[in-house]
Structure formats: structure tokens, C-alpha cells
Image 1 (cartoon, rainbow, N blue to C red):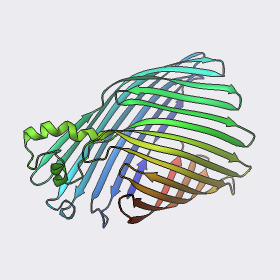
Image 2 (cartoon, rainbow, N blue to C red):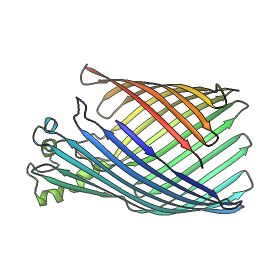
Image 3 (cartoon, rainbow, N blue to C red):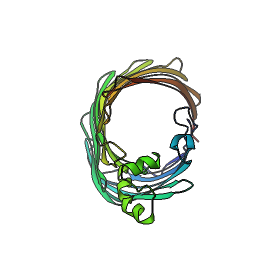
Length: 365
């Protein structure tokens, strides 16, 4: 898989209280066929975010607008479907506008109330030489919530945000305490995941499950439309403890946590259940010179999904960051993933090895 990302950002301070931020992001993903899947994936996405912030003194506000367009194509040859080659095209369009009213009590406490409206529309088109199926899922509606930042002491911070959308509740909370060189942080979050409906399973599996008729017609496709698109929504929760030590040249980050994911809406082609995992990670960086900083990391993860498949993963990484000039920074690295999965139904196990490399160039004007 190859990814290319371009993200220009414009930040302008208008006066002592007000600032403007405009950020764009372009993403291209290409996944070439492998021996075990033979599928080809192409994805392109564009994302724009505009924010206007007025710092509370004591009243303040923030206005934010977002826009996302994504298009993906999955092509599957006959060797996978067993019948005809197929093409699946997924399209996502998101628009949102929100406003936040903030009030600050000195430097210790800041609260805010937010409200907004969003439009989230997703469509998938599944094509074979004999069949064409189009499915839609919309997540439109208003949303609201609140946010809080509290500094009970100069070294202690609590920050939280809660939002309620048509698709469910989301929140994130971060409690941290800073000592002379060590910082302890407890992080908790919940988020809803919205996916474009997918039909990459072959039509034979869909027909045998009763999700669509063996020979789809206009009436059966309309009746079964909601059942298929129900696989588009899930909820994820994360709880982690992070310890950061900052020395004169070295920085060490230790993280331990648990993660779970559950399908809120699912179809008979997927398994209703909760995927759970525990993870531990360590990342160390050392500043050789003011401009050169290498790093190394190790992550261990143990997970079990709703199908009863348990998996143990090890991820090792090496990275290097180089400041080429006061405005330009280059970073890159390599990582190796080894994953072994076992099933409670059989004694068989599978080993997966993934090697990846990344480069990043940042320049500030």
C-alpha cells in the first residue's frame, strides 16, 4: 500500500484575541493486489477546515466549518468472486458548521457550550456484468455539547469535551499532572465510526444470507437496502495511562491502555460483537544535535474480535527527524509489524508480517 498526503495550513493572528486558521488536506491511497486478496484499491480524499477563534476575556467564541469529500474504488477479479469480476465505488460527502461560546474564570477555569449542524452522506455502487446495486446511508442532523478546561494547580490540568450527535455520543477527557521532569496523564475517549457501506463479499454470500435475492430485482433491492447499510456505524472506546520523562537530551514515553470497538448497526454478513484489545508501547528519542533527533519505538498488542480470533502483535519502529532550516523539517522512518492470530474454533494459526516506510516534509512560510 502506498499513501501520499499533502496538508497546507494557514494561521493568521488578527489581534491579541482573535486568530484565523485554514487547513487543507489531500490524500491518495493505492493498494496493489496481493496473492491472498487480488483486490485493487484506489482512494482519494480532500478535507478543508476553517476556524475563527476569539480568546475568552472573559467571553469568547469559536466558529468552525469542515468539508470532506472521499472517493474509493475496489476492483475484484474473477479469481475472488468465482463468477464475474466486480467493481465497488464508495463516495463520502461531509459538511459541518459549529459555533462555541466560551467563558473564562481567570486562568483556572474555562467552559464552553457548542452547537452545530452536519451533513454526512455516503453511497456505494456495486457493479458486475450482470448486476448493479446502489446503497445509501445518511447521517444528517444537529449536534451539541460542552467543553471544559480546568487548572486546579499550576502543574495539573483537566480537559474534557462532550458531544451528542444523531449517531451517538462522543467524548474525550485528559487528566495530566506535571512534575519536574515527568508527566503523568490519564486519557479516556469514546467516538463513533461511520463507514461507507461495503459489499466486497461476493454476491453469493449475500444471497445465501438472505440479504439480497439470488437474482436481484428492483423490488428486492429496495426492500433489502436498509439491511445492508446497517453495517455502517460503530463505537470505539479507549482508556490509557501515559508517562512521559523529559531529560536534557532524551525523552521517554510509556503508554498502557485498553481499546474496544463495537458495531452499533450491522448486517448478517458481519458479526455482532465487541473487539477488545490491550496494548503497551514505549517510544524513546534522543537529541544528538539541535537539528537531528533519532527515535525508536516498540508496541505490543493483544486483541480478540467478535469471531473469537485472538491476535498478538509486535510493532517495532525507527525514525529520524532533521531540521533543515528554521522553517523546514524532514522526518522519516521504518516499522515492522509481526502479527500472529489463532482461533478458538481451530488450532490453526496465521502469521502476518508487514514492513512499512514513511517520509514527511514540513515547511512554514
